[in-house]
Image (cartoon, rainbow, N blue to C red):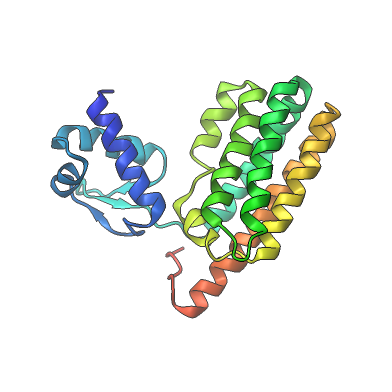
Length: 225
């Protein structure tokens, strides 16, 4: 892939994840090329990559739209995440180094600082959470796991809805991370896998509660099943 294609991919992906390009909106190549400062060819390549990431859908007439995930789609993604990240946590625990554990602890400290303030810093929480899980996957050392999880971890609907999570849900996530750290410190793969599986499934219910509340308020709409 060219540098221009990479630049377009990162820019469009960021706009989707932030909600600047909302679910269901059409992606016009010419307008995106102007925004990204590239020609239409790199944008076309970027859209194909984003389609593989399940962030973009293409119609029979070859028009591209931001993917609109239903609650069932998200449930499926979390169920797969629970299985795959549970496996990654087991592998990571068995391969854990002191240096990697220090990085994981630092990421969770960032999460703790983000959720304990007068008002929760959701961006800080999400950044710390991404680093926490990224280090675990790195230590697990499985390219197949990394590739499979790459399409599941950052659904844009989850990122947008996270801004409406309750403080209790954010604090619970921090606490579950502390339990994972304890399992990693013991190099106990079975314990780490059990905690991670429950952690991801609990995160789905936090998402579903927040999503349901936003739908009831009319802030977001339910995607078609």
